[in-house]
Amino acid sequence: QIPFDLMVVAAYGKIIPQVVLDLPKKGALNVHPSLLPKYRGASPIQAALLAGDSETGISIIQMDAKMDHGPLVYQETFELSNEDNLQILHNKMFQRASQILIELIPDFIQGKVHGIDQNHDQATFCKMISKTDGYFEIDNPPHLEKLNRMIKAYYPWPTAWTKWQNKIIKLLPGGLVQLEGKKAVKLEDFLRGYPEFPIKRI
Image 1 (cartoon, rainbow, N blue to C red):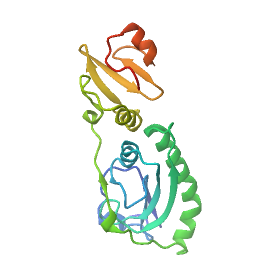
Image 2 (image 1 turned 135 degrees about the vertical axis):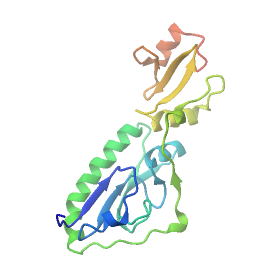
Image 3 (image 1 turned 30 degrees about the vertical axis):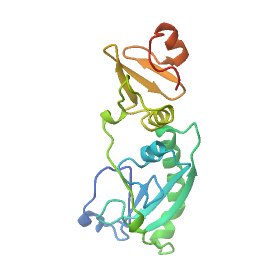
Image 4 (image 1 turned 180 degrees about the vertical axis):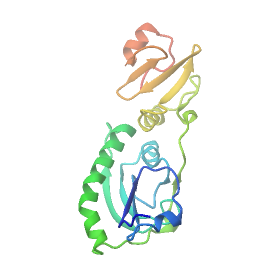
């Protein structure tokens, strides 16, 4: 066993047992892309986009054996824009987290930073995303606002998608539509080739 001071975890989808968390002398820190205790779980960025939240954030916690449960060491709020989608927000948030950790880790190891317990009564949870979460019935699509939230939350995977004329169609950010086996095009261009397509606006 090699002695070490600290473990840092980011975007890891499993619960780490306490016996592993106890290995580093100073414990373990976890980067979580939400304002904990809101959106504990596997899909916090998607959950914020699906809910139409105006803000989300980065939380860095001292890990314990429960999911996203440990004391808060640092939080920073992110304002959400109309251009944000899962891919953009994920990259932006974890890039910022890497900058924060460079400054935070030395102070944490030296005992200058201490965690504050989360308010567990306010905890909310989000689930693991599957491919079927992005699916909608083309004959009964979500209303426009919900559909746009799905497009943002599920890009680049699993995307907001449906089946039409026995083919898969994906709706992508930027007003793009992608027919199975074809390149993505603007919806207005797609409608010129397929005017019977039920969705006229995204």
